[in-house]
Length: 221
Image: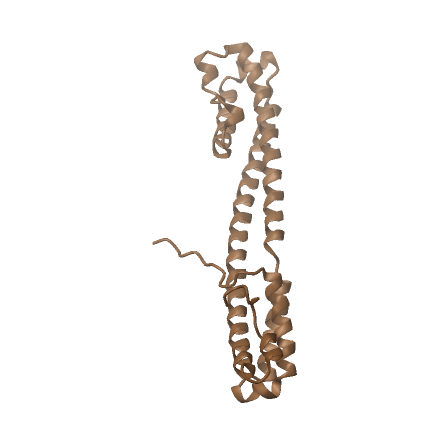
């Protein structure tokens, strides 16, 4: 069974949630004598204020996305280094075996530029294995053990970046979900408190009544 996607219960931004929350708390403190009979005390107001401050200090999705993109760019750059090192071997293998030969095809580099990350990952291993088997034949065109070791080092670096990219994608997903859960909880508390304010002032003070409206009148609350 697939996990149900968590969605925001408010339609404005997190920045607006913080702004609205702080505004409403200031009104509640102004009217705390009217709120007290409904069990909404200074302690509860402070707790909401503290929660809003903590929410504002949490990393945003922009930061998480930036971290993910940085690793992705590093991975792409490493992949290109790896392709270059593989091509350095293959142009020599072509001189020895010919591009259409069975031996050449065993290196598995067809469509190298278009290969996915997982395909490139496998290809790098195959090229080193095939080159090691045919090293005696390839030595004459300049293939060395050092060249193969370079591919192995790039291969391991590329593997590490693949793992890091997956970790950053997962971290961003978890952070997004947690932020939505936290934001929804804050919004629920805000609605509860402002609903009390609306009930207090709906028949006695229009200005104060409006102070507790969360959405503009043009938007359904």
